[in-house]
Length: 415
Ligand SMILES: Cc1cc2nc3c(=O)[nH]c(=O)nc-3n(C[C@H](O)[C@H](O)[C@H](O)COP(=O)(O)OP(=O)(O)OC[C@H]3O[C@@H](n4cnc5c(N)ncnc54)[C@H](O)[C@@H]3O)c2cc1C
Image (cartoon, protein in one colour):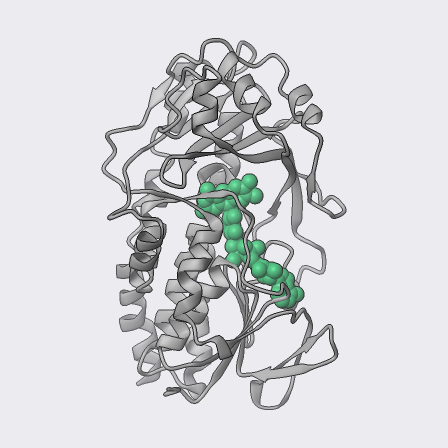
């Protein structure tokens, strides 16, 4: 039942758009999702969620269905081992023993878990939003590629790093997307097949295989049967270049992958040889970060607001923090059409400093991971540089921050 006097249109039904729609619907808001794909879909790769991401999902009331879907009673505590990409992969750093929970899962499973929580009438598929224009009384009109339109009091752009909605929010006039001179080759491989082929490393622990201009991230998903592999190749270090033409994701010949990582150690070679049909991702980031995630009655969440480098495994976690925040603010008892702008102003005060900090840190982390070897950092230097990098990302107390902002800013302005 709709108990609020305003309606919201969400562009994009990825992990952030879908969770946002559930949160807003539960708060009694008339919400619609417009997704350009024919169904909720994600690439069949893994995603790691840190403790802050899990707390945001818990706050939204959707963590339990995700855990149920992946057959885990609770988040696990397996943390990364760092080893060199070359040689015998001897241990450089083990961050096990940290008390923070993490979850590693297959992306489509997340959408499969959440989709049944949303009334089917809320989402329209095959709907590509093409432009936004203001209409009377602060309302916004969404124009779709098929010529139809929809009007709402608020539009939320959850349409990913190549966001169309972002152009309405950004004043800079130029695209703030940059290419990180990095290609990521992704694939899923059977752990049993790797063991049978002689893999020595226990890949049931997540690993970061560091090198010079290259690193691999591996972690198990699907009840530890499948290894999620992302092999990052960055020939030019420490620079962000202009955005590349699309497509950014392409299937490539395995030879390209093997050539790019020639000279790596045995276990890395073995894993790459098992990636028979890798996809190559051109890794982009919003750079410089956006100063504002809101303009008028248009707001951004997720990668549309802060598409970042994947090196902290924190991108979607920041999206879930956005979603938790905007759902609390819009769903608050005092938020009505008349006070919507105040709620959006508070959202815009809280989110850009936090998510842009994580974005900047994701760039710094890539510069550590891709800098190991005789010409770069030693193991000791890597250990020193990694100290304290994750804690501010994981330990942020979002719930208290949002509660305080509601009491001090939202309620004061609404009274
Ligand atoms: C190699 C790699 C590894 C990563 N690993 C991690 C990790 O381990 N942990 C982590 O937290 N993050 C990770 N990330 C980042 C994470 O994938 C993103 O932050 C997350 O997918 C963003 O979700 P989103 O819902 O904002 O956007 P998306 O997932 O991009 O969803 C956007 C949706 O909008 C739809 N859409 C787009 N345009 C339109 C339009 N005009 N009209 C209608 N619909 C539209 C799309 O079809 C899509 O469904 C990684 C990223 C990469 C590239």
